[in-house]
Length: 147
Image (tube, rainbow, N blue to C red; front, top):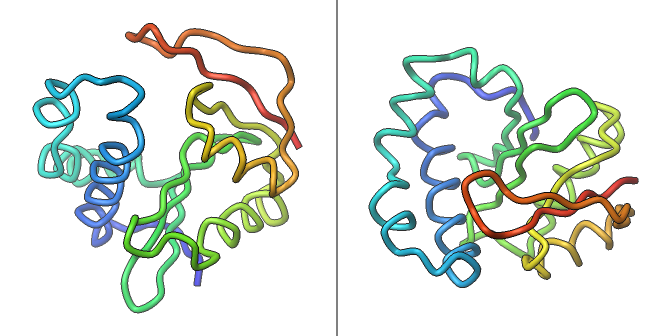
């Protein structure tokens, strides 16, 4: 089921974010100092616990335990991550469906070089708009997709 995140989900959300980002972004950014030094589970979980308002826009896919998460900001999908152990089981598709049908999300930004994510979003009706900008603090571009 998809439900709003709670404080009890903080460590699981942090774990999914950290490990999925490492798996998907290390090949793009090639910066182990960030991947393994700056991005850590405990500080991120602690940040959610100390600032519970950050969970107000995060929804989780909970099937006995949290397997994926989506961060929705107005009509924009800000983040969508599925634990790599549970990829290709339809969880990301269910989160996208929830975001578009229940929350009226129509846009997102994705790393230009993250071709797997771009294909996933295209499969779910999102198309490139032609807009792109530098991802803050990096030399990589993010591209806008709309549905």
